[in-house]
Length: 132
Image (cartoon, rainbow, N blue to C red; front, side, top):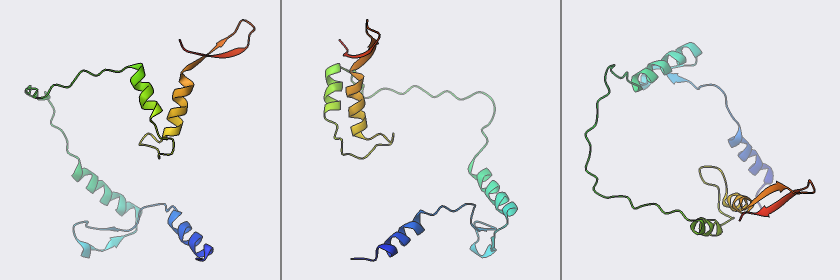
């Protein structure tokens, strides 16, 4: 078995966050220009780069685009309660989260919970009932 301290040491070295900006070439187009570690010079280099990437739009009227002919018409979207139930029932709870950072187990649980609503009963107790 591998040395557990070596493994944890390696993984910890990869997790460390570093602050600040590393050294930058004084002229980004010339590797022989030397590097700087001074904050003011780094700010000027990054400012020049930022300004070179973004352009200023001309003022005045925004041009209108010509209408294009629609070649393929999109089908009508039909959303039904049974279709939604089918999608939620087919969710696999062991899948990793998507870009929204919610895993499918959470979504499935929320769907089941959303089928109920709470109301105050006549005896002043909260009661969960299925939607009709």
